[in-house]
Length: 236
Image (cartoon, rainbow, N blue to C red):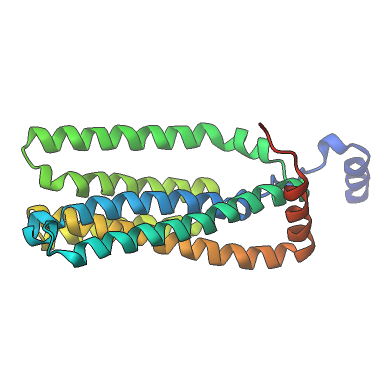
């Protein structure tokens, strides 16, 4: 009977078990890193921008260290963004060469992704309303960061990227510690710098992990992807 079932499965492709859709994770490291770097810049800017409220001298002409700090943030952002965008474009080309159904992956995940993003936006809006209603603007950054950190947990499951679990958990723990240890504008400074740093560290880890994935997938695919990208006509 087992042989008959096996022969029936082979003769009937529709009844044969279908191979699972390829994981999206190997192709999303460049895109994810790019988004995390941009988010990290936003949070670092928010936190660092509140430094003059703690130390007013930082906003005067004598606060040279404050200005140099901004220059370091800008320079690091440019370098990281250029690196991540190049990785994103190579991943997109490699996706085509490897014949991974990117459109199908997006169709399967887009509804859940939009739902997660929608709840994130609603959560951030509620935090703003509560912070203003309760006259606690000092907790606004921490509350928004908490929502953003929590939204990485379902994203990690959706895209099968465990690194998002670590990033989300680190942001949530960091927010709770900042609220417990600081008060006033110092909460915003600490939350902004901590959240931005976590996002940048996660992005760098993703880019490094992406290189390992590229080697596992085969250098031939990577080289073909680069050739395909260079030869692809540009849209005007």
